[in-house]
Length: 319
Ligand code: CP
Ligand code: NVA
Figure 1 (spheres, protein in one colour):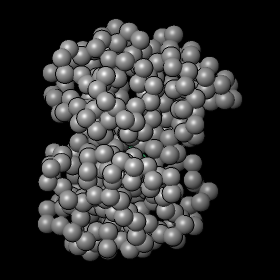
Figure 2 (cartoon, protein in one colour; figure 1 turned 135 degrees about the vertical axis):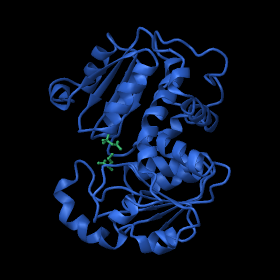
Figure 3 (tube, protein in one colour; figure 1 turned 120 degrees about the horizontal axis):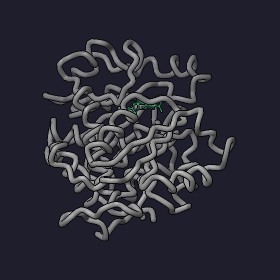
């Protein structure tokens, strides 16, 4: 049984397989979830993740069930283990958005169904799949030279940086002092052979980058820190001037929701370099590719004929 708590739960070959499957038209998607339920559990709000997952499950022939924050009561109404064991009575795959990443690890350890991370405080690997799919479509994975992330070393940055490392794409993070990545994350990236530079200078990061990416300065659950974060990240706004330093043909990406006038200027996010709507749509295509992959390891899921790389070497695969 396979889980997807961080993007390197796939091997590099499997990541490429998921991206290839995500590129197939929805009508050509294998109906590997026919007769299966997929639970979508949310401890935090969502627009893109909920809708993209629901549609992807539908396109694979399955039935998605949304479970809203009040119904979860993680470790309050019942334990994370009891939640996942209950849901596995009805569903073949269990996808969960949580605050604490450890709740996902505890659910996966029950080994009753594949668990998908729909965002935790630490990681957002479904977003990273869509980001890499967008880069492959707009620039090409064999042509891109560097991704620059300007902002918080948060869940979105981490999964993207690990994904870039897996595909051999150098990345640079521009982040103010005190908001940078942990040594453990940088070690994880290095262990994958990734080249990730950290600076406090947004201009240095953006110069000659093919992708300039940013995310909110205050993530869900950090609302109490908003005032100090606004002050610390003020000089890190992605402005037209910053974009002008990037490579010719560079694109702007943002996972959304966005705050115009904070992490990004309206002229950039709504301007010609922005690919945010293609990126948002790609959440659904990437979710379909991922679900097709995991269906092969679900208790009742149908294995894909032929090309599924299950059983291929999978360095970081959780069991
Ligand atoms: N990008 C993203 O995960 O958006 P939602 O929080 O709306 O799902
Ligand atoms: N970093 C943001 C991402 C939202 C999709 C958050 O965690 O709130």
